[in-house]
Image (cartoon, rainbow, N blue to C red; front, side, top):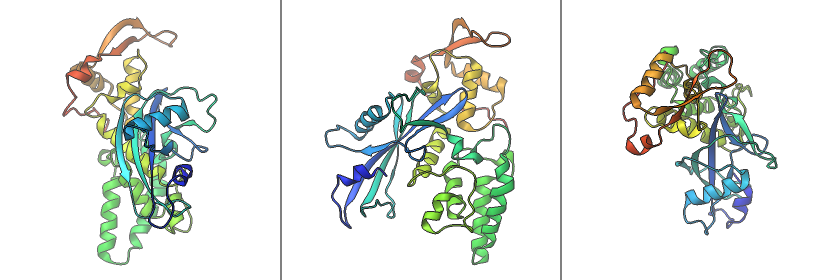
Length: 316
């Protein structure tokens, strides 16, 4: 939480402080990026001021002032109001989070702001190169041990069912949208560093993956899950693309967000069927090999319809 925001609110055991938290996402050179502060340990956060006409207007105002990054698409993500969310003054903290899509820009002159690969925080979520080694080597053995430590047979079965549901048994059963459920399971099992703050730990041994302050990694997991779900039926990826791009760059952006490989021909058929792009008449310059055609997003598509019912051709 942003303690400076809370410090301007009434203190005491029954005081409540509100803050806005932004998950700002970009895709740069085929990698998913998130804007962070405080040495890459926090998401941008700030107070809601009474002068703002709305929560979203307030969020846009302080994000652009703090980071110098204009926002494109923005939607409210979730309100985090758990009873154990408090600051050093004992105030209960309510965080209203937003997901914003933008393009990465230089952070010169804004030292606290840094773009980071979001798989730095969730290395088990990147399946573009196959099943991440950390799952078989570290996560599943630790979860099996946690399942076996449940106090009753029914509790052991329940834990095992959650493990099988969230992490699956192979590539075909992996559900890329269950980002939050996986993180919360690892937290409950005491396998992520944030769990150590509340006494949940397996002998203090934590999985690879950078921790974040407060519950910001949980908020980031919520945003990744939301975005992975929405790119299946709304053309949000285009908010992250440059004005002109190749179909390969577009496919890589989808793959970066989903954490999965896509079938090349099926993906191109998918884009063609949705009539989302049009040729610019230009060709990619400076690339090795045969120059690729450049495309642009048909802006009218967003107003005409959504891609309701469409499914990305994920590689299984």
